[in-house]
Image (cartoon, rainbow over all chains, first blue to last red; front, side):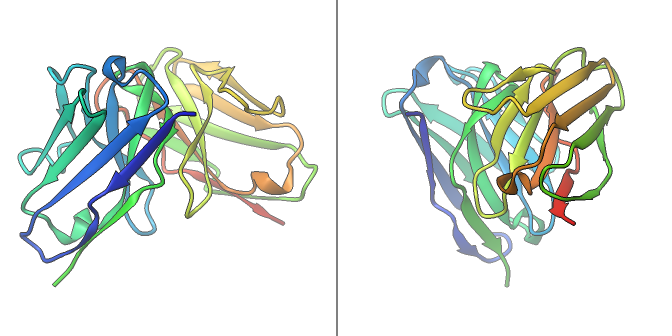
Length: 120
Length: 107
């Protein structure tokens, strides 16, 4: 069974940092692109960052470019999202998702999400 | 960036009724359009990819159609577990944006 498990969410003040992790199992991780998708309170889904299978190509939404960094460790089947200079509008549930056909989706498996709250 | 719009914002129906949801893209996405079901508090679930392909385990009452810029998700007969929010998403390029969602609620 394919599984993705996020961790690392929490409460942080504006300007602070958090590092999210996504642990994958049940599929060939090394050939799979992974993305982070977030949902702010009362809002829809937003794809904020993606990484291809070997980490050579990374992608960021304009809203997080220069503040977030995505990386992966294929030896540990994990993807990380380093989030710096956090703002109140980064408050959201963050999901990691497996891209099924190409690096941009569709997203066939999702984790349960980890909540990030940015507030003073 | 390709912008997806969905209509209606809310669809109020009874179990057993047919649901028709629309998604329109600001430019052609070819056949690279997917649909997801999201129940708040749960992970989103892929229903349909590449316009009309059902994902693994998805019941036949879910079907998709369309091409280019106009797409439709149809639920032929609503089951109680189908009342949720539905999002369309393209994968033509980065960012693979989502539509704002259609909420299907119980009438």
